[in-house]
Image (tube, rainbow, N blue to C red; front, side, top):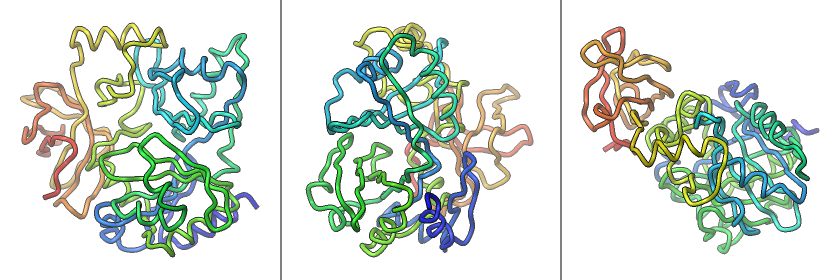
Length: 351
């Protein structure tokens, strides 16, 4: 019963792809149409492969505040806040969202790939605190609406007050007879909303959104758009190999709060301007792969992360890391195979 509703969605896709051990749609039809929904319409995306945890207990907020980079202590009911769980070395273990719901456990939205590591780390640092984590990923679903017309769609589904939610706010609503948590999301400059519901009701919400003008979009179009706007994701740009400042996640760090895991290292990197590389866009005619090393004059200066094919660009686009002195629009670098790669500022301009 839990998977039947999601299976109904997946059967409509032309191709499925396994992400973090979960099958999700790669595309429903023409990628160009799905991509256009992100840019000028409203794209409807299945994000159920991501992690969803509930945290209860009197010390839950205090624990997260002491472990992660953002100010969680000041989080009010009805608010959501992104934060980073870092290692002792100041490297990224995961980027997650804390959602504070009235009268309910905290909802933590994690990545899928690092969800198990996240659970282990939180458990490791929970000693005497009154805090309990429950993985509710399997019995819940997560959909997203993204694009300039997503405001119109969510207004039809849940009302104008929900459509006008600022980023970082959420509302508990009913859509097509289903109770849905709608979160005004954070990624990029475009409008987007995350929708969380019981997994067995996901198809009802999906159908209602599609009937209100949202265009079903698969991972191929979603990844192309994500690369263009420069949003890093777990397991690709977000890994223990990089620190938050390199990944352009400075806004998720509160430098005025007290200690958290990795705080001394991250503060030192910021204070003494020790960040040596940064996340950039990349463009190549073809033949570019995830993990390719990048060179200038025979010297290794970075690597590629996510590689995608975008209808708005000729060839391939990618996100990657390069040393600061090469992180500028138009800089030419090469792969080990000699492929020429152009460095682009983020967000990438498809014009």
